[in-house]
Amino acid sequence: MDAAQQRRHLSQIPGGQSFEQKLQRPLLAEDIQILQLNVGKACNLACKHCHVSAGPGRSEQMGREVFVTCLKILRRHAIGTIDVTGGAPEMNPHLPWFIAEAAKLKRRLMVRSNLAILHEEAFRHFIDLYADHQVEIITSLPHYHAQQTDRQRGSGVFAKVIDMMRVLNAKGYGRPGSNLLLHLVFNPVGAYLPGPQAALAHEYQQRLSQEHGVVFNQLFCLTNFPVGRYLEYLIRTENYEEYMSTLMAAFNWTAVQGVMCRTLLSVGWDGKLYDCDFNQMLELPVDHGAPSHIDIFEFDQLKSRQIVVANHCYACTAGAGSSCQGAIE
Ligand code: SF4
Ligand code: SF4
Image (cartoon, rainbow, N blue to C red; front, side):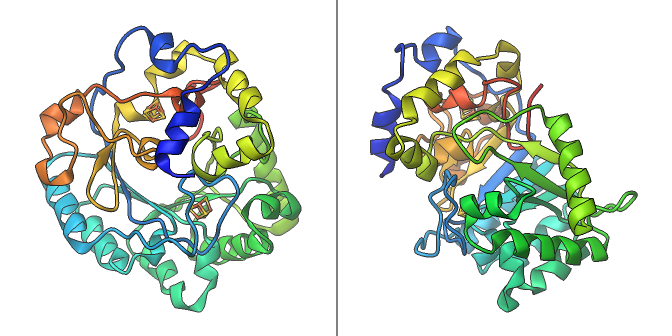
């Protein structure tokens, strides 16, 4: 399903009150504290919940020039966090160079890695690269049971992730008192909202340390977004209407204040600018007069831009809310 088809489908929601109508006023950014780079859509996995629809067949990759422009912007502006995502970011050949350059800026530098890729010989060098540059690692683990995780991410993925967590723990990642941070991301395996983050984090900590001897720092709970492969799954299983109704019924005004687009700017592989990674996958670039490409980046205009919203935004404001760093409340 291409982006235009997804947007068309998302315009049809139960009850008909769009996210824009629900808000009743424009949603405005308040700063740019995070520059998120989506460095490409190629991935060694093809997870069922993937909003990027990433996989081994995708070829879109961020080129060197876009990375260079991002570094120039980061040098000029006090943006505190550099958040690298994909696809599998490690499949972008410029990533080792970019990590080394970005680390010199002394910002919070994080990579969203599926970890299973580090199991492959050709990508193992990233383990030392990440540790040497104190890169914060965030990885998805939809369940502490192999069967559930593999159902969503593919056969054998759970075992690979646990293996890599062991290797990273041995390097100091996820250990108390260490400055090497390893976070996990939970998202529901089916069409329902995540439970309370703190309780789930405790459960994950207990189960993973007792059953597999691995540790991590934080667990982020993410709501599944009706975008990409997950939207296709909802439509195929005839769960779309019910899932959207669940998101809409759980709308939470408090979460609106904390939605990530208010402090984040997302850069696509080709340098286009988006309010978040979900808008990027729906091909909804920043608008309302703000510059929409990294080559014409203007901090002052972008930091207070009006955000482009659509009905998938209901996933950010449902229940405790959902951001790229977990629950909002
Ligand atoms: S969810 Fe992550 S690891 Fe899975 S296919 Fe998408 S980008 Fe790859
Ligand atoms: S989906 Fe993106 S644009 Fe919409 S509220 Fe969430 S972060 Fe903001």
